[in-house]
Amino acid sequence: MKTRTELYAYKMPKRSRFLTFLLALTLTFLVGTWLVQHTILDDVFVQHQLQDSKSYQDFTDQFNKTINAQAEQSGIPSSTLKDMVSETTVEQVLNTTMASIYAKKENPIDATPILSEIDQKVRAQTSSIAAASGVSTSAISETVQAKFQTYIADQAQPYANHMVSLMVTLESVAHIVIIVSGLLSLLLAAIIVYRSQGHIQGWRYLFWGIFWAGLFVAFPGILLRFSDLIVTIAQNANSYSSIILTLISSILMVFVRVGAIVAVLGLLGVLICIVLPSFGKHKEKGKY
Image (cartoon, rainbow, N blue to C red):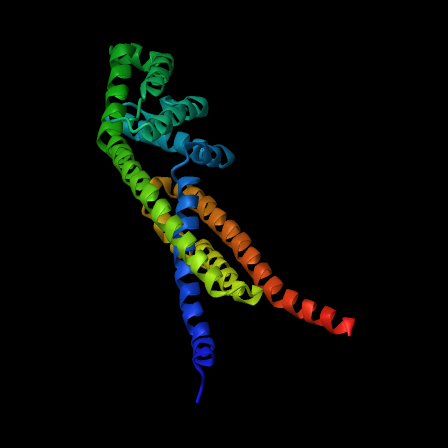
């Protein structure tokens, strides 16, 4: 019959594995939420991704296509309206919009710079049409601007306002999750260390938790980044699918890299906990 000490020692691994699983979950939420705060909820990160990709040019091309299509609907030949909006102006508007979204402002899109550029270029490019039709360039410019303003108000602004409300919700949830998961992780780590009873081998359960947390953080990023699922998600954004695809890919790669680093650190900790006691035993044997 096993003694109480032997029975406790027999049950301890199962309990420790369960604590390791709980620690891995809480650390996953902690690291994952921290990464959300430093990617999706970080305006500097998002702006850098837009600058490093061709996103500004994509927005510019899409705006120009929209303006040309609207002009044709109003009876203005699209061939007369070329490059109504420049990439520099679009970059200015997008940067202002992003700043307003992260500042939680209502109706964050201010298209005034784009409208001003449209006015200047329409007047310059439609002078021959205006002379032939008897319609002033001012009237043509106002028509094009009104169409584009309607496009912004009906299609772009609602999405921007939705992003503002989403940012507010995400920040609140992230703040709570960081606190709760951080406290639980500390508590579970303390319990695991206490149960190790001073033996460094007992610490391996702590590092196994860190290792699995790293894998849990990296796995969704690997699954989405290197599968067709991310393309399907991006395609739902229609005309801006390439922009969404670039942004999501960048965020997922951050999760993959950080998750891999955490997993490697955890694995190194496990190896140290296994190797050190063996090294100590060999050293003691060498004395005799």
